Length: 84
Image 1 (cartoon, helix red, strand yellow):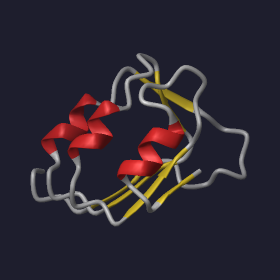
Image 2: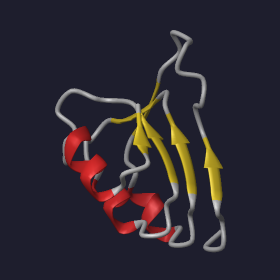
Image 3: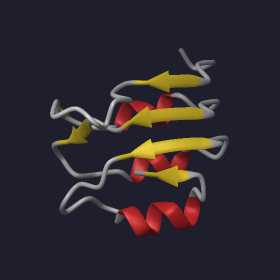
Image 4: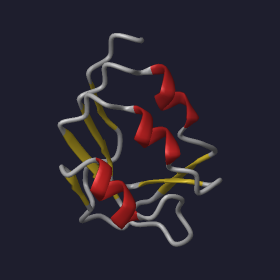
């Protein structure tokens, strides 16, 4: 899966459905990822630093989560394409 370029897991932010996953650490194994939508997913460990290790992202959608590290604003500075 290291060649994966598109991952859409939870695109529909207009719904009330939310899912929690243990961690986003698996994203570090996807260095070619260009498109990531995880609107309805929240990492239980609140660690969103794996997103900082994805230099090829051209489109990123992540919901704001209370206590997330780094903050949504800090992620947006690294990935200007970030939307919530």
